[in-house]
Each structure stands twice: as structure tokens, then as C-alpha cells.
Amino acid sequence: PPGGGAQARSPLRSARPCAAPLPGMGNAGFCESAPSVEGLLRAVQDGDPVRVSYNLDGGVDVNEPIDKAGHTVMDVFDSQHAAFHAEVAQGGDKYGNRAHEEDRLREVLNTLRSHGAKKRSELKKRDQANRQ
Image 1 (tube, rainbow, N blue to C red):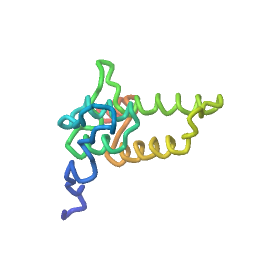
Image 2 (cartoon, one colour):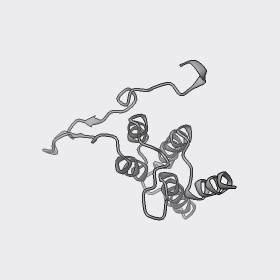
Image 3 (cartoon, helix red, strand yellow):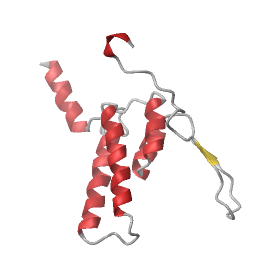
């Protein structure tokens, strides 16, 4: 669009909101609910870049507080990312998928950053600077 603003993206273009059932499991497929901060939080906790994009492209505010203390999904991501690296440092790659997990986490982080995600501490500093 003119003026260099963010280009509108369809929430379904990059996301696969529905998944097929697993063969032989006797289960039904599932569909992602409408974009929500709760859906975004679950996607970040699961390290699922497709669902993160689905929720953000669907209009969820990446810096919406997820608790009364004002934490954001970026705080959750940081915590999980640190735990992942602590586990790896202790030899924790029991499934042999460390590289794949790193790629997924990197994609989640890049998606969050591209949508302007901030940690609670960053938002507090910004708000304090704006009040002065």
C-alpha cells in the first residue's frame, strides 16, 4: 500500500488451520479456532510457527498482555527458548531433532519480531519514556 505501511495478509494464506486425522488412530481432524491471544499463546508454547502466523495475520495484537502482570507472548517465548538451550547444554537431544527444533524456534521468533513483539520490560520502558 502507499506510504510503506504493512501489507494486509490473509490469515489463511500461510496457515493451515485444519489438519487431517492421523491414519490408524481413529481420531478426527482438528481445526484451529478463530485467531485469539489464547491461540497465539498456545502456538508460542508449542513452538508452532504456522499457528503463530495464523493468529497474528488474523489480527491478534502481539503485545496483548497474557496475564495480570502484563507479560506478553515474547516473555513466554524467551522463557521456553532459555529452557530449550539449558536442556541442550545438558545433552538433552534424546530424540535427535535439535536442529529441527532450533529452526522452528527461530521461525517463531522471526514471526513474532516481524509483528513488533516486545517483552513486558521493553513495553514498560517505552511507556515510561512516553510519559516523560
